[in-house]
Amino acid sequence: MMSLAKKEEHVLQQMQQHLLQTQLCLHSCRKLFDRYLDNDAAACEALWLEVQDSEHQADVLRRSVYDLLSEGAFLPLLRGDLHRLVDALDDVAGVGEDLTDKLVCEHPALPAVVVPPLQSIFDKTMNQLEEMVQVVQLFLRDHTAVSVRAHEGLQRILTMEHEIDLIEHQLTRSLFASGLSLAEKMHVKQVLSQMAEISNRIEDVVDCLAEIMIKFQA
Image 1 (tube, one colour):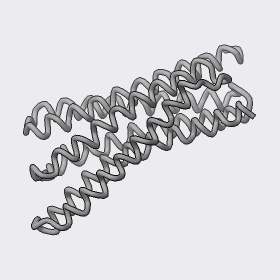
Image 2: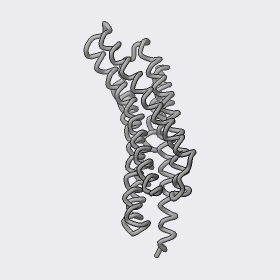
Image 3: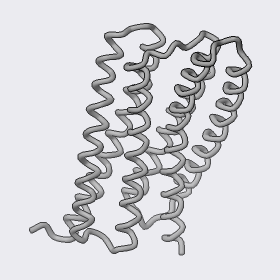
Image 4: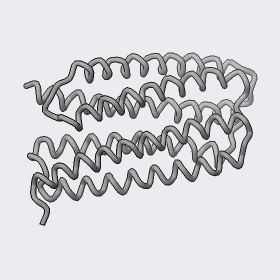
């Protein structure tokens, strides 16, 4: 039978792997979006499979973390926090998968005028992702330490989330003021909303982490 210390070490290792799969999922999602703009259907299909695989691996690791926590790894307070954190991380991969499903299955037409703001949103989202990965890694290495670097990373993520919200708002206004048909507007808006949702889910992760860090400060 695995000792309590080994279970706790295994939880942190599984969460590290889950974080990696989430990161891989979003990198494949970004590549797929770029290839979609290039009209490279074959590359999109291959990258869609990569996204599916990373998201599935993240699901498997999430359930493994659940099992270890249910077997008594960590004190009850931290156990609940880790459960919420891995859930929030899993949602990041999930919304990335949703976006690629829409692109590959529905083939929405993206007018040239909407492409630069969408690319800007994705650029900022990927920067958020890298900050999130670094901050979560800091936490997993020593969950009792409150790091200045972690606080700075959280602030940068929140700043970028606000910038993404502004771009989303401006693009939504210009989109519905355009001469596109309502169906075309709605399809582009769905892509925009799903893309921006990745940023919102990353914000959920850092909100969860910030709450945990406050508990350790207390």
